[in-house]
Image 1 (cartoon, rainbow, N blue to C red):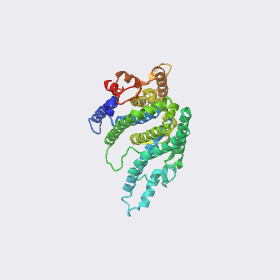
Image 2 (image 1 turned 120 degrees about the horizontal axis):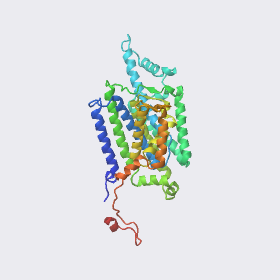
Image 3 (image 1 turned 180 degrees about the vertical axis):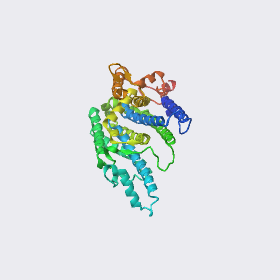
Image 4 (image 1 turned 60 degrees about the vertical axis):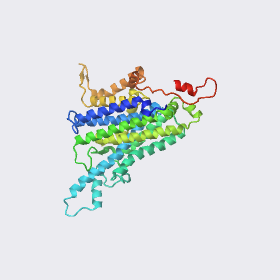
Length: 411
């Protein structure tokens, strides 16, 4: 009998249940909807962590399951952040400009309002004209569409060109890194239309909403938790069943899968594109909670960190990516945010803000050497990630000794 998707993948139900409990606990202790035991800044930290977990899952699917070591997925993450950040900055600036011009003797014309908005946004780079890229910045629906379409189309075009040329292995990783570096260097230029090195700021303020940061933070936390839950289910479906088997087979022996008649490039392009779209959505939720985005966020080093998170958590395990991203993100906040006290050795004073990356590198090496399955591999000992066996039905062959329907029913 055909079992349900969730019955065949119990780890998905366990994850969704834990995420629901975690979300409820944070809500009840938040300042915006609960007792206030958790500060607003920490709620934002937790919300950002959930977004990083989502992009880590996307990275795990494309690398841990499909075998494509992409060093450019954080670029898609940043593109999603820029797309929503343009609307946030435009709408918030428009409110300020309209409010300041409300007391004028003559009501301002639409062109005067537009010029004032442009001066406020682009004055920092010596301009007041809106670039063509900002043509739809006034429209939230269109910018939300850009969050999905721009990363998706970029990944589709890049992936089609790379996969049809059968670029694999380290060469493909270098190509994705080159794409990320080129995009980052372009955004650093003042004439890129996105304020160059200054980036987009003030994203934590919601236009049209007279709400405090405590309420805004918990709402974004809810949205991040919902996106993570839906993303986990989506990718759980992608990596299960026949599609998941083909994807893993491509990772293990791409030539054999192609020999069996599967169009390998289509599977790889699908995985590469859908993970890029999800990365863009994660970025669109992350940066309003961070409050600012600049080209440094899209630098290749960010995508390398993403690969490190997945490796520490455990490749080929969706929950492993979540564990790795959550632990490293929260540990980074603690060590670099002044939470970890310095250690005085007498001859040297260890300041963790200076030594955090060294510690992260050491952990990466130790996990690779002694826990090749990552931290998530320890969860396998509990047995909750083992797929439930299904009885086989139907004749598997006419020969003597072949698996028959009767044998499948007796399993």
